[in-house]
Amino acid sequence: MFKAAGIIGVFTVCVFLLSGCATTSRKNLETQGLRNQISVLESQLQAKDSEIAELRLALTDAQSPKDSAALKAAGETKSRPKVKDIQLALRNAGYNPGPVDGKMGAKTREAIRAFQRENGLSADGKVGKKTWDLLRAYLTQKVK
Image 1 (cartoon, rainbow, N blue to C red):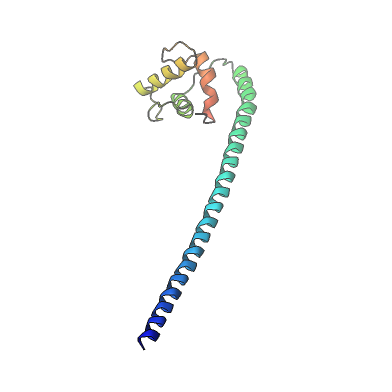
Image 2 (cartoon, helix red, strand yellow):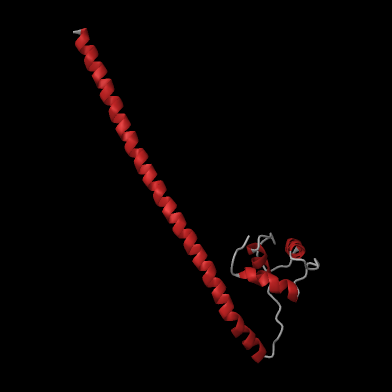
């Protein structure tokens, strides 16, 4: 009688262990499938981000001649960049101008100086024509 109970006990334990393995295996397969889907979605996202960056650049290039013509027609050949645009371009270029609030503060001036130093310009903390010509490219795209 004890032998029969022992055999039934061992059989029950084996069935329990084997059913646990099947469940774990199924969960592992589901997890791997989800990881694969995430990888595919991440690649698609990167491709779309690249496409967006290219479209923004094309849009900027397409608008530049129109803006120049409009400024010349209005008699304006020089326009000063807005502080928010400077801050946004600095942030996109990888510098920390502080909050993008349209105020020319100490952090913004230091970020301008750092940008100027790294681009071989006189680091005076002022956004003149040369600085803005280089910085303007970062308005529509992140590079760093």
